[in-house]
Amino acid sequence: MAVGKGWEGVVLKLMRGKDFTFTVTGTEEVTEHYRRVHFTDGGLLAAAGESLHPTMWVRVWFEGAGRPHQRAYTLVDPDPAAGTFSFEFALHDGVASAWARTARPGDTVDATVQGTGFTAPVPEPRRLLVIGDPASLPAINSLLDAYPQTPATIWFETQHASDAELPVRVDADRHEIRRVERGAGTTLVDQVKAQLPELVTDPESAYVWLACDTATTRALTAYLRKDLALPKQRVNGLGYWRPGA
Image (cartoon, rainbow, N blue to C red; front, top):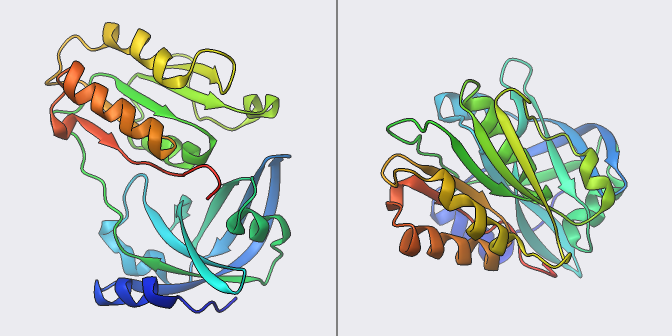
């Protein structure tokens, strides 16, 4: 699927973004609200080389209403030797979800690599404190995979009953997942503020990774930095989506 990239594509090209075309090889219905799409990488993983990192995302181009739209998606289980990876789509109303619902083997999608990055926390955290939702599940899983021996507490916001079936890669011996139902009275922000401080014994060594909707991410990042006094380098926050986008 060749999509003109408009002014955003011009800007990314000026910023030395690299373009690739991915080809669909298969799909999986994880739940009625969550779909996994498998791809060949169009040379992306070989080009990435040693820069391949946990939570790595690319800008994917979709067409809607006659114009290009770019959305960021995390690489799931990238295999450089095979040149394959997957994307996982939390389905809602939007151009990316519309594409994912009808994707079939042989379909193609264009992507630009520019802007992604991950700085490993030093010193390495004794416990990962992770806050996210279905949209950031692929990044959460890649982070857990990158720290296989590190305990973690995960606050995971859900919207649908079937979200309980989503493949969060938790190990009962090392990981604790605290699910927060969206719209059930207690917000994710409220629950994190009530529960996280007891796990932060030393702000200098704590490490919080969060990726939710933009408003939630901003509110929690401000709380972690100002109220709990975590240093900037110990908070990794990114707004993954906006309602209606």
